[in-house]
Image (cartoon, rainbow, N blue to C red; front, side, top):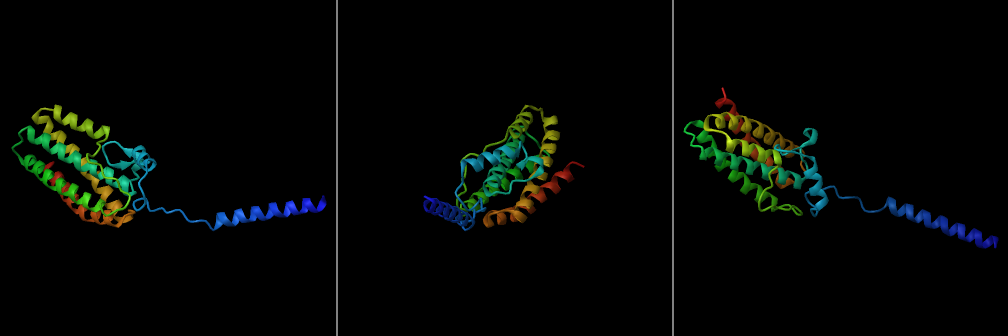
Length: 205
């Protein structure tokens, strides 16, 4: 009986050691969020941290995963396109009309370039129609409801805020993103957004 107990004890010890060694030598987790399969959990996480209307995450921590960046940038482009079309419908005849036309041209190009970059990243899920945040939609509704005089000032404020946050997102992702095609896109697009910002600030003076 004593020999059986000793044998069982040795067997249990060997089993525990094998399990411990297996845990230490197991495969490491791949942290490349933009290069692995996209998951619903990742999408839910990105949505939960996004600040409405900014494309930024809570506490100014910008989205740094490929999927979160794609979703935020797509919504940002769509917001710019929708805003510009509303402004055009109000019959602006000054420099803001020309600016709105430039927004349609540049952000259409940005959307196309973003889609091309995203197609090079495995696991990225492209949405056919970008999903605007509640805050973005609220801003569009306010712009649509305003009269021409109020719309001009409102559009200027919205554009300043949106471009500042888009520029921050682009420069941050270009420097510390997790997908080379998307980082290249961000690096090439940030100067375009900076040029838009410079124009907005000049027109507001």
